[in-house]
Image 1 (cartoon, rainbow, N blue to C red):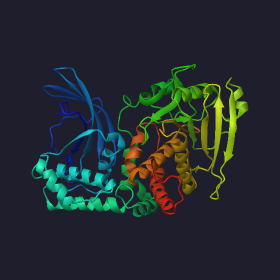
Image 2: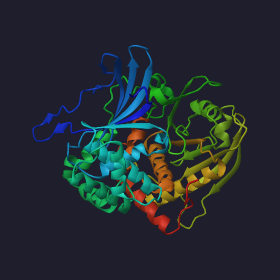
Image 3: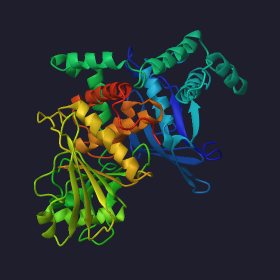
Image 4: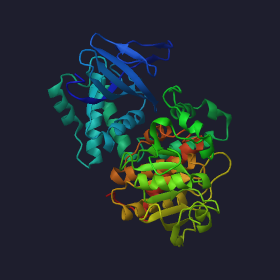
Length: 476
């Protein structure tokens, strides 16, 4: 069926773990392996799990299905939600909302989705109803739960089995309507986290446990490898922040090496529109400009104030046989503070102008890697999106870097994705964006405080939007 109907997304709803008896329930015949590169074989097919991606209360798997009869290979993604008891409801609302919203992301819009539980009635019906209702809510349509349930029952009888499941749908919709962020009360969440931070109870908290599971990959080194980066250690400012082999930028010419410490990361507007890298050193300046040319990048975001000798300084450039004209440098003229400056340069490698937008605000130095002024940072990201739209309507030409190509640049990428998603329809699932970036760049998000700050930043964004203090109002 997956082959014939081109199903690219599979949603599996089960209750796989019994916390009372501390045993795993065997609801389903295992059609996937719990280990990366593990294989399950049937009479006609061989199914290999090529990747496992943890998220909040659900697990994503990449499956590679090969037909033994035709040798045809088909790739699909599976999302397994293992906290849904048969004829009951999930453990909370916002984790299910987060899963639905992940499937509603723009890159999944044309995908065919297969949903199943054990019998394909109760839990499956709940998920299908939530999927269509949340999608309708995002487009501002009138919601009629009873009418939708009656409609889906015309296609499959007895979908949604209990009154409790029916009421759960209403509770989820209420959470989506009330709260701007994945169905969770932001004020209560932030207050709870802030109360935990100064105490030893943090290590035992559910949120801390979920965060650690989310940011620590459960994939072995055979999948997320950094072999090439280790072989070119002289080109890395910091060995902690290096690209994975599977999504690194590979230079073609004209460069001494095909390696550069740069990662292609997805963004909400264009899947391959962003490159996350480090501030170039003298030895990597030529590869850096070669990358700009090769990847058609003309907009650079610098999220940390650059060193005095950098690629916008003529003295530094001339030592590397690269001629750069500094066309203009403009500090911010904003009543809120001097927190950014813009540059425009033209090099002999890339004839077109390159626009550079630099964040000059301060970052914490206590290991939390956060902007000291979150509102300034929100305004900076908002203004950055505004400039990107003005210069490149396709939003394909973005390079983001900090000094080491590490967690500050990754933090910016997450925030820009959040804002782009908010500008589309005002609904986000922060856990999905965090998981996504952590699977694409090593040590992308390394402090619990960063995760809390993302929720605070969403609150600040909404407050500024209500006050009319943002440059970007509607996504285009």
